[in-house]
Structures are given as structure tokens and as C-alpha cells.
Length: 113
Length: 117
Image (tube, rainbow over all chains, first blue to last red; front, side, top):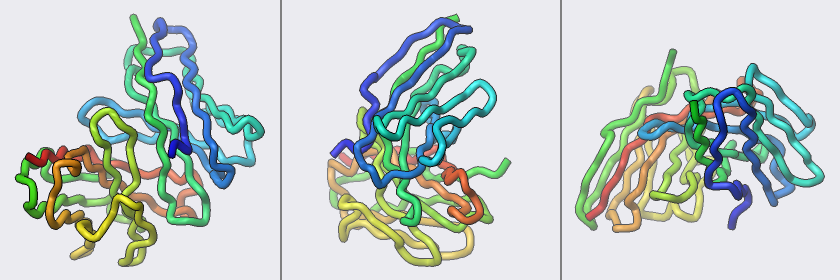
């Protein structure tokens, strides 16, 4: 039961270019979306989030876009840096509930110098 | 910066044994969670805990699992009789809750790798 899907297991980009990570969801009850970054041997680290009432949220080099009608969101990293190399997880929440996060499988981003 | 801590970092146990995984959430947080990640798979929700009781649990969280907040700082996950398929990375997380944190972010610990042999 994949309510949150990240169809690209990996992505490789050159330093300085844009990284675009994609995420699709099927549950229309989700109303808040988050991106987490994970390095090996560490727990996931919160990056950025977006409410379903918005279509864009920006924080420094990170921008999340939400297309609610397509049930699709994406994370843009500009410019990409080698330190951004990590696994990126998309997650979703249904507000008003227990706040449990429903995660995608993750996309491994490699930024080459 | 405050962080969630977990002990031990790695636990090896034999099938059928009980294990207790320990977590110290961030001190002013109100919501506590356990997630797990089996190797190569996604991070899965196990249980959420608020106001000294379970607020939601997943199908994975069966009678073999229990959680406790024995004092004001620790949050534990107990697996009563471990199975081979319980081998995974277990993450504890905490949050301020939706009223105090409109971003809904949860802060994760570094995880405990549980290996059941």
C-alpha cells in the first residue's frame, strides 16, 4: 500500500546545477507534506514542508512545489552542493490525527563535484 | 541544539528474547513516535504517544510491542518476543505538536539497529 511514492530510487547531478526530486501521493486526505534528508547512520532530518493550501514554499536553496490536482510534489535544490548528497524522503500527514508521517521509499541524491 | 538520543546504537538478540529500545526525546516536546526501517525499505510508522497514552498504532504494532514513558525524560519501545523479521533500524522521533509547530516537523534520533538472530 504505497500511499506516498518516490519513483526514482536515485538521481545524480553536477555541483551547481538544479536537483529535482519528485513525489506522488494517492491519499487525498493528506494535507501536509514534508521533505526529510537522511545521511547514512543518522536519523532523518527535516528540510522543508508545505501545506496543501499552498503551491510553493521556499527556504534558501530549497523549494517545494505542490500540485494538488495531480497529487504531485517536488523538491528543488538550487544550486546543488556535494554536501547535499543523501537520501531524500517525501512524507505526508493527515492533520487532526496522530501526526504520523507516511513516508515514500526515498531517492538517493548524488551531487558530483 | 536539542536532539533526540537513542540507546543502544546496535542491539543483537536471539529470536524469542525481549528487547527494550530507549529514547530521550527533546525536553519540551509533547508527541513521541517510533518508526522502523527494514533494510532497503521505506521508513514505517509504528506508534504515536501523546499525553501518556498511545494515540495511534500501525498494524505492525501488535501485542508483542509496547511503549512506555517511565519518567519525564525516557520513552521506550519493548518487543516482548523478537522474531527474525523484527530486524530493522528503529527510529524514535518527537515533536511539539501541531498547535505549537505549524510545520509539523518531527525530530528523529540516530536510530537503533536491531539484529535478531
